[in-house]
Image 1 (cartoon, rainbow, N blue to C red):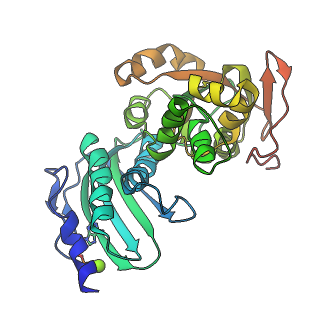
Image 2 (tube, helix red, strand yellow):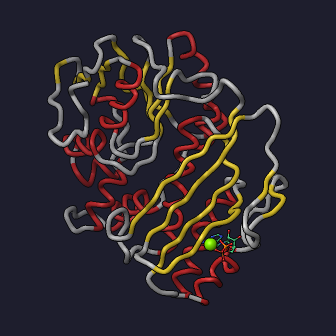
Length: 321
Ligand code: ADP
Ligand code: MG
């Protein structure tokens, strides 16, 4: 296993270096200082080759996505990311793969001023676990459990693109080369909405990131908050590429049910609604109002121009809770 020991060194010293890291890669533990008056948010996600990503996927995208899904969890809580650690399991040492992997990892961590502070490397099936840590001022965490009837529901960016990208890669969807590039890129390189998350700290009443599809993830907010919701499918933000590729009906279905977009879904009460535009102005990210929280616990209604719209069969939304 000697060569696997080299990997820690492979990642050492690269990427962004933070002042709050006293001991980084190379010792038995990382040691950091923790800012006073900040709470620590911690999240872990694992990606397994052949299950969460194609083993033939570009190594750069694999690393990018592994980091992005963790930063997305921090964003969904309103946390500012600081450190990640990486546990990497690989079937063999492939220097080119590792170089591309490191490039993807460092591209994202540099952009968000995050430092890789340690990890582990083992010989095994291709898989990686990343733990990400970040800061939130006390009382500012954006939770799932605090939506209230009457709050407005918003989502960032556009929905369904990553799901279509996956369909294209697996040969189930055909489209033009340009749409393919766009959609596959959204699948490989999701954008964690970090700046939106921190900007929403005092504005949103609840928040979640969309990893399993809008209906499934909004369902988590409804369950945790004991509420229901009405979602207007004609207000769902769809990219031109998705609509061109799938047509409007299918594009809406993807926006409701497909996962992996890593956009944020959040709620804002009537009083805060006026502040939303100002809060998000510095982020360059568009948020779209798609509906409203209701008092009917567990009931998620879809509407198209105010008429009832059928729930897609693969909604991922649990009706009974
Ligand atoms: P130990 O046996 O003490 O766990 P390792 O040989 O596993 O030490 O790791 C040596 C150093 O390299 C540690 O600081 C560890 O955090 C780091 N490291 C190992 N693998 C990785 C990795 N995949 N990514 C980042 N750091 C790693
Ligand atoms: Mg180790």
